[in-house]
Image 1 (cartoon, rainbow, N blue to C red):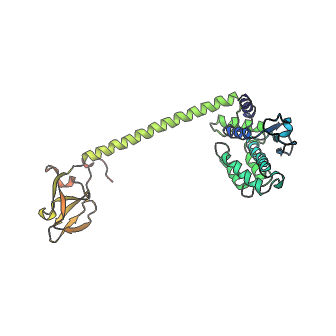
Image 2 (image 1 turned 30 degrees about the horizontal axis):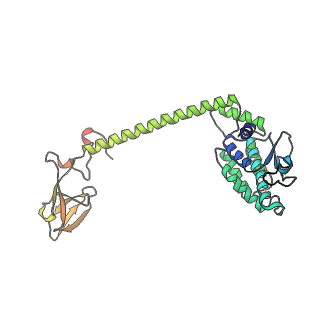
Image 3 (image 1 turned 180 degrees about the horizontal axis):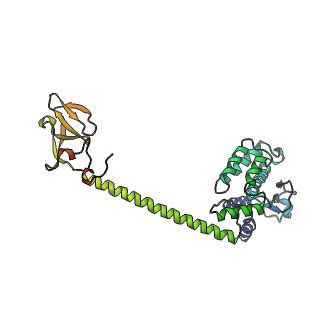
Length: 312
């Protein structure tokens, strides 16, 4: 555990914070010598297989020569550094799976690279514009760190120093982008921004709840103002006079005309007419006698008329 804690401490200034657990998980799978080089050259990173065979379990081993080696140029922009790390790990995995039989950037390596990068494909690890460029890169999966990918990363700084300036400048403007641990000053600024965002989200959530409660209260008030019918029981529709209100399958109708064998009904909401047999059992309805017809539910009915509100 101490070794792992030391590894996290060593890598957190270089690896994107949200990607660091995934990188550590990969490093825990194999005995790997991870070299962080400060030399500025055209080689962004490289992989070397073990120089001596891997010893069997329980064997004292032969030191670092029996380990896979990945070297990274730490002065890279953190997004480029992480991308190069996954690139080199794909070489390691391909070597373990196929030995010398697979070509360095052949189809096996390309497939491994795509698969290994999938857990890192997130806007919490890379900005959206870089992810779009990476998606285009993986259409053919070049062996090189292509110019368009380099340009996308360089928008945030060509190296660690420029990236730090860009990152701090964005923080001061209230913008947060994925980054490694950038020091105490950046940590304080980041905490302040995140706290402000949490407060804004809580305020907005309270406003949404308040609006929803008002809508519910208004809906309850509207329902309370609608006259409620009283059921008179079920009986043949032929026993009801024209103008009576009935309910069939939960829907209210007006008896328009008693003309056997089919009695004409009207939907008070839509005005659509229909006919039913005169022996059909229906639920007869009655409203309080003090309610004028204009207030009864149906087409043109507006419970808000008395309160001078607007009905739609």
